[in-house]
Image 1 (cartoon, one colour):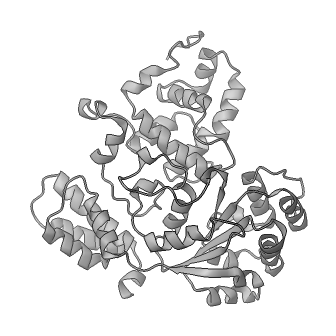
Image 2 (cartoon, helix red, strand yellow):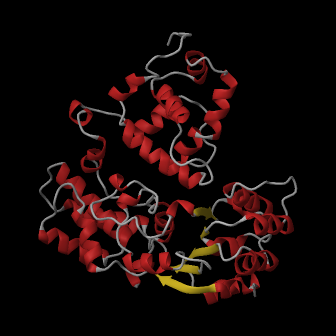
Image 3 (cartoon, helix red, strand yellow):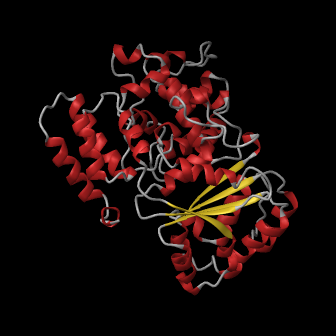
Length: 409
């Protein structure tokens, strides 16, 4: 592509003819909030401009020249922002996007490229109805695709409405939706209602914009050292990070500065207790003291694990009193009938009553199993298949991808 060194009057507007731009903005904004909740909400005008340039096929150098900016500055901005959001959006590992050319390939693979005139003429929100809404495998990142857990959500949000914020544990077997529930807590109160299903609540908290939500994934090894975890928390809190970020310095900075409601979501805490020796009794007791006594009730923890609290205490022979602060435990079980029916009814192509009954029976109303079977039924209907091969495929997918834990419960 020729390098044209003049200011782009339309700022790469031609991209609108080839990409589902508004849908992409929405999903990128959600990824940004999850990855960097301390940053400005939504994509900035600059981030949108750079994204459009990449989707037009321009290199960072070409974008810089067209916008009369510094090439190195553009590249640095992309590495710190859009590239990282894109990795989360497309379920790639962190820091694996190295080449700007991957942006187009990854987003096209994820379904954001307009492939026909029919899709091109759809309004942005109608994309949801034209695509398969069933997600099996990855955690649910967009609240629109999260179903159920109404009782648990009411109880959890009630703990955070007023100081002192209270702590909670989310316990459930593998594949019961713990991570998706944490992600939903993190995003549902501030997302635009236009991006949700009809009737989906967002009014869980008073003044939700005041809250900070920090998601910690202990399957990420960078969270396995004291310094790595504490630096991440300080960054999310927009507090200064010192060269030597030890526990004492962290507690001092946070206790002096934290005055707005903050909820730290600790996912897969069992991994942390079993693998990360630096996160010892002293560490957990420091966090307990911080939440209980030093920030005027503005800090709460939500932990998620497959094992109950008494078993978590036994990992690594920890006797930490940290686990005594969790006064509410949400035990995740199968969805209620009404919740499972709502998930099934979200299919753009309706299922027959016979198919609905079969899906409910085989899934036992566990969210992931419902998602797998509904996905297979939707694909078969979309392809015009009239036999029952989808049932066999769905059961085989369950056997290959899901432990037997759910089916035994």
